[in-house]
Length: 321
Image (tube, rainbow, N blue to C red; front, side, top):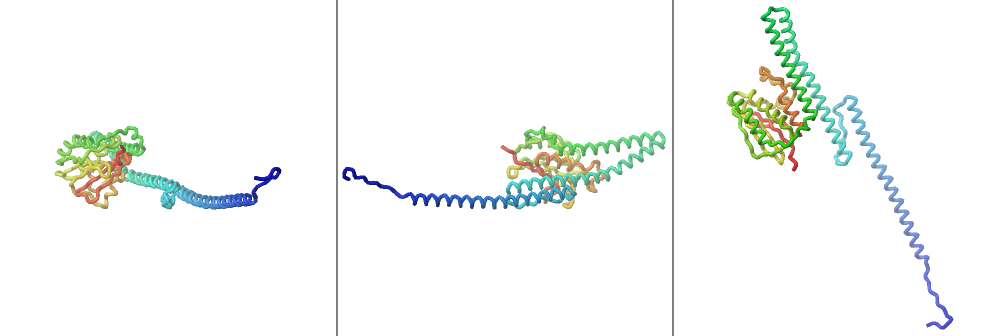
């Protein structure tokens, strides 16, 4: 204990604390400066990459506007937002190019296929104008038949255009494919029997899809009618339903002579008719209509490779739970 009147003082030097404080502030300043520099450099690199890719998109779009429908936006494979956008745009461009090619093909086919009936119609009307009464009536009857055929052709093409427009999606409902095949057998069984064919169904299991029942009936009707009309008597036709990796598949198979492989791609072209089929009535729009209906339902339609005889499969998207 200190004596009375004697005081003792104690303290500490803050110099060290001030030095540490300055060092912390300097470190924070340097860290901020480095972070700012990295942000500027990163932003410049990202901006440069974005501008480069956006310029590539602009060049591709400009080339397409100039008439090069094969131009596409480059995809880097990084699966980022720009890659997904580029992929979606490329798919849209593929669809537009296919439609343009289809339009060009249809225009040529219409000009080719209508030349003969219109010429015959004109010749018949000229004979009716100059011939006697009996020939006059016969020529008019022939002219009416040719006119009906031309109108039927345009009606079929307009129906395909309506289907491709997507308006029929409003009538979509849940459709049982097994029930659909039973109905098709009831409708076409007697027709097949009358033509000397047999029509059977093969159901591995039932499956349901979202679709327009009337259009699905038309799709299968076109395929079954083709199998009946273009195969010899005694041909067996089978309507099969299977499920492949959760996706329902309908297959129309016949054991007839089949179609050469080099013609498989052409079968779905509008107004395409094989030489062996040109003596039969029709316009070559049955499979084109079937393809339009399948695409409306998000399904894939095509010839089954390696099948005995001839087979066409419609593979629907998986049914969502």
